[in-house]
Image (tube, rainbow, N blue to C red):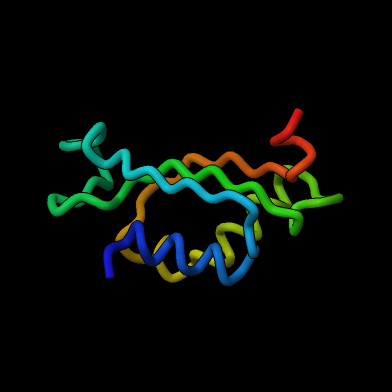
Length: 91
């Protein structure tokens, strides 16, 4: 399974998102520190989930990082996160 697919599966299981977009931005970081030659090291993740209701931005990001702890300790070097409630996404 690709890293992108693993991220999608783990966030879907952990957060039951209404919307999830995972974009591999690794190509923009070729040659940078932390970039893996085989790619799949830098991602943009946009998550819309009711699980974020009443949570601060930091708490939401912690929820994502907890779900992806194994990937962050391994292949994934960087995540750009957008964590929204359904109400915020509709605004």
